[in-house]
Length: 405
Image 1 (cartoon, rainbow, N blue to C red):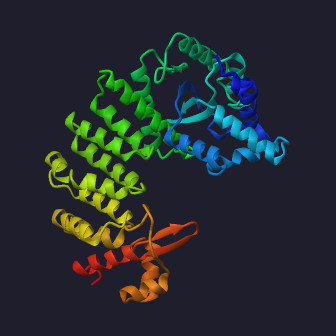
Image 2 (image 1 turned 90 degrees about the vertical axis):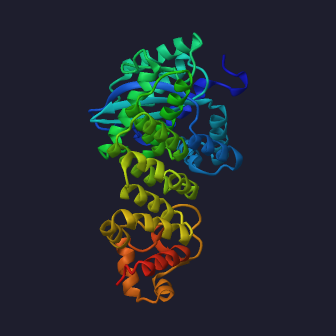
Image 3 (image 1 turned 135 degrees about the vertical axis):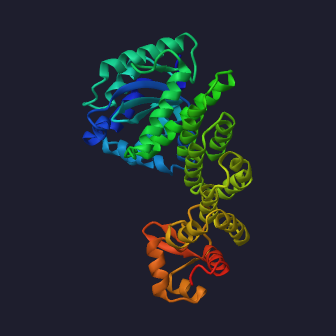
């Protein structure tokens, strides 16, 4: 039964629906008309959503702040809008996620779940998908199936329903993983890419829970779930899956490709230096599968450069790259954008003139390489500056290998 202290759950659902449709906003209209209703599932909050809710409830700031504007647009005064938003997020127990599929991609319409599948709330879930949503009847039936499953004691991650949900829970989540990978490989990320990241998290957690129950995951599925974890920013969990996939016989080409995706995701993490240490410790074991592999060392360098690793670590990785492919080494470090600083605090930032003075070159020299992405850079909004620490490492490496001569 609903918690009586939460008030009218139908009213909360009504507020959510109004927020979704305020100003003629139609969630389904954001997606191609060829996309159709795939399934619906109930899940706990993802880490990003849980963090946003905790921040909003603590001090009223963060990415959920715009919810207040949505209530104000309904005619509520500021104080009432803020209070209503706080009540709504405090009452939420998890997420109800409507999954869409089509054109080799997946997308989602996530909605707050208040812990009860009463008729009124289910009706609002359907309405909140938008006036053009073609799967209304199928979604209504799926929500009814979810209610029956929940009443029978079914829990996460088995609370799934819909025309493509099937009867095998593990198969459902693994097919979603394949759909996410297809979306990524086709370059068809949704407008709100964070939605697909949350989906990647839910897929990863669901598969982990099912695997802990003794379910077997094959090598291709392990790789797909690793991609989902990386999309969610969960490089540690992805790393464990990569190791499991290698043990299960992941082929050389697929392994190198997966490590490339690992590097791209880890380079954006606040703990990217930890990710670099993880990969550095595994270069030798991985090369037992691939043989001496330049691309693995380049991936390591990408993470280290993004995190402003100490100069000695960059020089050590550069030596590994050079030993594997001298031509590619010189090309990548002088002609490819491998120097972008993304992770952690950038430290002192220099403008073009100050950077030119620091390395004894002209401002034109620095500007040209900044435009090419071949010198360290850090983006702050619309501004691009040069981190002093990274620049010192860059110069040391250029001098050590005479790459500017």
